Length: 222
Image (cartoon, rainbow, N blue to C red; front, side, top):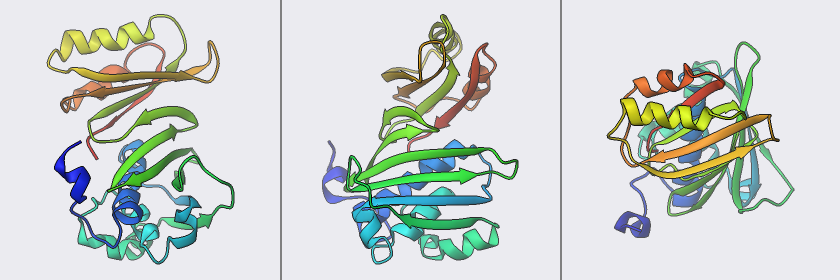
């Protein structure tokens, strides 16, 4: 823990949990969109997010983060107008079901070609976040360090191929955390690789070029 975990982030208020944390959740969805603009997005809100999202600015913060704005960007207040100008349809849907954390959001988005995606995460206090799911797959990261998400077929050799690329072409990268989850044996799996330093841009296409890798997302420190 460092001093900013205690005093909180530089942000557009009013709340580190409900505004700054919500914006960072939206920014993870922005990275998963990989530079694309959705035509529509639904924000499903749980717990205290569902009860107080208007008064605490959770709605504008989530939407602003989805468009790539950081938590200290003054344009957060204009998120609705910015989304309207970009042609993004958006809804905020309070959910009655309990969630693992009271400040939880499920962000579902649809692209112009009909493809969809989603991010599930929680704002856990002081502007900090925890991401639990990406596109229906379990993950576990907080966005403080660069995180690579690699969706792939669950077949032998894929993990070795990815780590070999990192060893041969990106020797300066140090893996600080690794997590793997899969839908079923032989189905789809996702690697979560957290690294200490930001990798070069080329790493994404180098990993996506590997056999049995469907796509890769590089989520730089949020």
